[in-house]
Length: 450
Figure 1 (cartoon, helix red, strand yellow):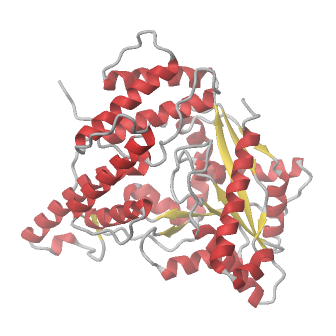
Figure 2 (figure 1 turned 180 degrees about the horizontal axis):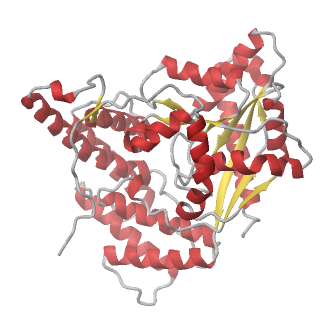
Figure 3 (figure 1 turned 90 degrees about the horizontal axis):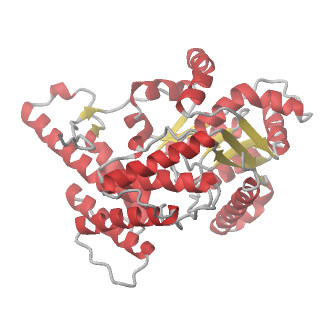
């Protein structure tokens, strides 16, 4: 019997109340007890390797002793980077720093910034553990001065480094840097300004971190199983075609199904990227029609964020602590709106992923991690086409090693004169330097195969 890939069962729910960020002994104890188990059994990580780690350890030492303030700007291509960094800070950093000749007198820790939607889809555990670890929520589209001020103060006051993903969300690709948002740089400059006003000699530093997965034979077997699963869903068989051709025909089939869905007829000479762009425009228009909204910006990612925010606000109703006080008619209408928002967000979820999927098809002789990442993303393309989201992305292709590559440190305090003269230009220049640091990390990480 046919079973739908996604079951659409959504009703309106009360708003999510997240406690003020704080360090809870119980939450820290839970992480210490379960962290290794989570990394090994869920993420499948057997070893974490750090390259060019001394600048990171020195930055930690200076931050813990009040000599500097530190932002860990980590790339976020897979979804598990924050958990990896938290585990590394709690369990490994002090010992590895000592091995590099850097002695940390205080126990290291790291605070995180996360998207507020995580508290909505992450469930009760996420709503308890995130604030208890001192993690601070932020909205992508809503102007929330209290949340921004909290984050700036965390950088300004220290002593723990603050970890932020400048990509803004999961970016699905390790080997390139699709886009960087300016928020991390703005927060760092604001903190540097406030420190300077106090007359303190305490520079604010950004430490670029690029996290890479490396796989062994188990990863190769998982990749082959996943490719066969994709072919099962797309109606193909492994008939002796080479690796790249198998990927291409599955990718093109999924692309064609999306074009049929949105009534798009591509031209014969239109590139894959051009066809994807047309699908994204159509998907966003469809979502906006369902929600009955007009975009406040023509920029694609901004439209996507707005759809996500509106959809969540209709599924998890802000400002209504108890839906039982509504009349039955009011509740029924809220449920209808929530259902429509769920369907609208299916179009948004497709755009959320496929924006990053405009990458070349790997060859048979490319490194295993490049091929495996593409196969994972190809499955995600199929999953989003069927109504899936990030939670439906397969996470059981376990890496054998995780590589943390540390990039060139960016001192924001040294750039304050430029920032005061021209904020926009200073932020743009710093983002460019951060991107260059990441690209350098990617190049150096390619030397490490296993």
